[in-house]
Image (tube, rainbow, N blue to C red; front, side, top):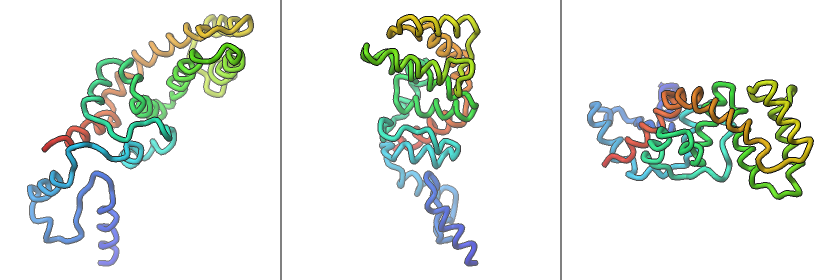
Length: 208
């Protein structure tokens, strides 16, 4: 009996689940659903990072620490399905998609894409330093997070960096990786449990 009580106590604390340690309160499925609806706020205002970690344990690492929104609407998540561009324009969308890619062992693609976006905003006196760093981490043939590009593109990118780095020297490679994500990973993401469960939970929480 003591073990059963402990188990129920733990279930009580799990996000998104509504169990009672008092058996009298579990009279019927409909009663449980009514209690669930009353407990859920109309606005989904929970900590999104904590929610995603609890919903998908493998997402424990990689979540942004400060930029992700704490409040996310179902409408925003639905917009992610319209295009990869809209997904990546949303900070939480970047986090969720990035962790999906991590589950597929291809997180280097979005990390490289984001690094290129940041690189474009770099001041001229720091271009060479950042360009070399991005090249060594993602583009070089021995890179720790090597992206999947052909030999010609890899060599032409190296030449651009050696000559005189410009804000656009990674544009060709970035476009290749974007297209790869758009045609390969993005369609799978929209069918994944990560995306569909998040959308479902948001929609349920907006019901009156």
